Length: 255
Image (cartoon, rainbow, N blue to C red; front, side, top):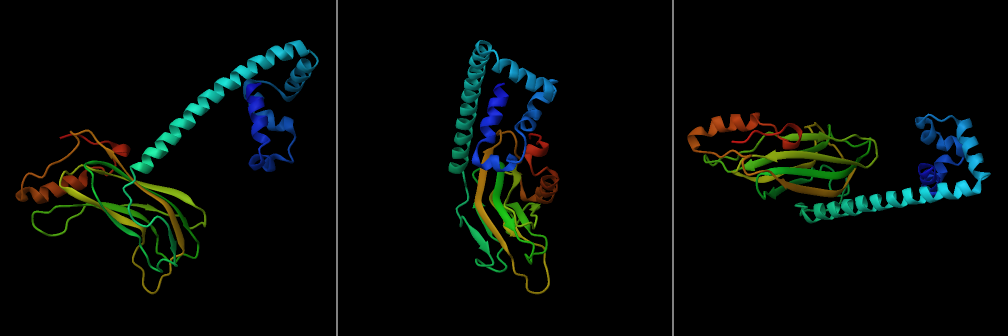
């Protein structure tokens, strides 16, 4: 019954009621009582029984109210925790560039490149709400990221790129890309939020990017690789590129 009351309150909200305005209320409750083994007839007879026995209905409602209060306490705790985590992620946001992009207004071929100083080895998660229209002229657009690091030879050096591609459906979707830094000589996280494959001719992008966040999650101190000398540079690069880019997805073996 507590689930029935919760469903009834949910259905009465403006944003939900329009979805169920043409459905019978009993049909709305089916997803609650059927998994418990009750038929529609049994559910209706039970409601009628309590309506005709008000003393028993009062006792039942006391139990329902207690159950709802417990659920409210639990949900409030979850909401508080969610808001705390959202606040922490906002405070931890390493993105210091423009917060909102609309293409082509902000650039017909803009790739929204970034280069961010690393805070240390660990997991870096790049995320953004992105909407790409079907008429976007990019050739397979998406998000890309990699690490740049000090190279004893003096030539620019970077890890392999990691990509997440967008769907051109005119709908805002939150995309995220996680990449793990296990090289103590790495200095920057770099990439693009509107990466695209090379394409001949003029291409005009039609997309919107907002809520850009770059979060850093430190890994235990043992999860890293140190460059020992310039002589081992090629071996080091082979080993580094063979490591998984995401500690969350595959895990990393310590030194």
